[in-house]
Structures are given as C-alpha cells and as structure tokens.
Image (cartoon, rainbow, N blue to C red; front, side, top):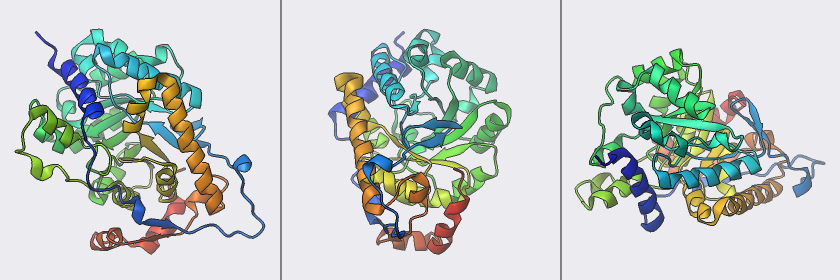
Length: 361
C-alpha cells in the first residue's frame, strides 16, 4: 500500500517550488520604523559588529535559523542533508519537517537523521493533533533516533481543515502540550505554520513548562494555499488569507510570553530580521528561500544566508548598533494599519517597549 504520509511530503515540496504559494497579505514589518541609536562617541562598522546570540543554551553565529520544512520521503533526504551542511558551516540551527512519517514508517528515519553527518543544533517536529495518538514514550524515541536538541510542536488547524487527509482532533491540545512539556526531558517550542500565535494563546502557554514559542505568522508561505493546490478546489478559498501577520504575532506573543520566542513567517531580508530582533525575537527562522537556494546544493544555501547576514550588518551600521542587545534597546514607531490593529487588540505599545528588557536572552 502506498505510504500516504510520505507521498504527501513530496507533494508539498513540489507545489511549494512550482506554484505561487505565498500569502497576499504582508508580514507587516514594513509598518515597523526603527529609531537609530544616537549614543555619543559610539561608532559602528562592519568589523566590530557581533551577531552571536544564544539558542537553546548554545552560542550561534547569527540570530537566524533554518525553519523545519521536510523529511519523510527518500527524495527529501538530500534536501535535509544540504540544509544540515549549510547550518553546520554557518553555525546556526536547523529544523526538521514533521516526523510523523518516521514514526509510522521507521525505514524513513534516515531522511531526518542529518546529525549522523553534521553537528548541528537540531529541532525535532510533531503536530499537536498527533499528540492524541503518540504519547511521551513514542515522541522521546522519535527525538532520540535523530539526536534532536529540542522539539517543536506545530499547530496548524487551518491547514488540517483544507488537507484531504487532515487530522482535526485538537481536543485537549493544550493539556497534551502541557503534559509533554512536563514529562519529556526536552525543551518544547510551540510552533504555528503560517497563521500566527495570538496573545491569548501566548498567555496560556506562559503558564506551562514549554521553553518557547515560534510565531509562524502570516506573510510568507501559505500552507492553506499549498493544500488548495493539492485538492484543486475553491471550497476553502475563504480561509486562504486567514492569519495573524508575523510582526503583529510577534508583538502579541512577546506582550504575553516572557520566555524564548522566535519569529518566522515571511522573513525575507536582513531588515526583517533586525526589526524582529528589535521587537524581542531571540532569533528568526527562514524556510522558503532556503528551499529555493538548496537547488544549488549547500553552497546555494550558504550564499543566500551570507547575503542575509550582510544585510543585517548593513542595517545595524545604519542604526548604530554593534550587537544583539543594542537592537533590543532600540525605540520604534508603529505605523498604520498595524498600529490600529494593536490598539484594538489592547496592546499597550509603551508598556511593550519597557517590557523588552525582561525578555529571556
């Protein structure tokens, strides 16, 4: 019998590479205006900028990582291997796509097992809907089999609604996530996949033992669109553009959550990274541009990410910031329509700016 989960993994990659699967709405970082640091006597140049930061208690060379995308099909192994080689070379973390396929079919474990070849900080991945079926013991074994450093639990109800094989059993999702965080000896990161985390969810998660949140906001790759291409239907077009833009999701999450936060969802430039870090992100995840770059092997990924690093440094020179902490101390203005939305969401921007000093480093 054909492995449905494995086949779907390859379909997702093909559609993402060949079709227009990007959100029409933006990530809203264009409405964040950073105010340069005018500290007297301080001069910043490319040579005295330090981009290093801490990720899962380990030092990395820049506040970026490669978001989880794939695995689970023989043709995805080379993609993950290219990503791992680049991540190792640049000393940044990488994520895996959902590992459900390797739980169901052990013979596919090798498509995720990149640490056999490269020493990288590796993020495992399983869906919140799968926690009903797979308990702590199975998840622990899944992580051990690839020597993962942490576990991302992705929540993707919009995608599951559209996906023909979708699992809509999110009953007790909060309690299941809380239980995993309490009982599994791994750092747990709650991750959205393109629809964003709200302050209500972030506040609830702040009371648990999870380590962090990945915003996964709208403005980048649209997984509802990918599923719509798979099904060739317009029945769910109404939710195609549904989601919280990444900048808004990051502010909402940071407003209610004082632990580790990463910003993903349409991060496409060094300027996006700089703005996200200034708003309180510990690091930024990039996915779709990496998938495109890996067509040229690990060197393609390295070349692309070196460009992002160069852009980050250029922005920091403009802002007179020499390190990550400088970025986190910058003041900023928020323009409409994002400002109006945040006001409607009862986000006190002045309070938010003051609270950034308490964010986990």
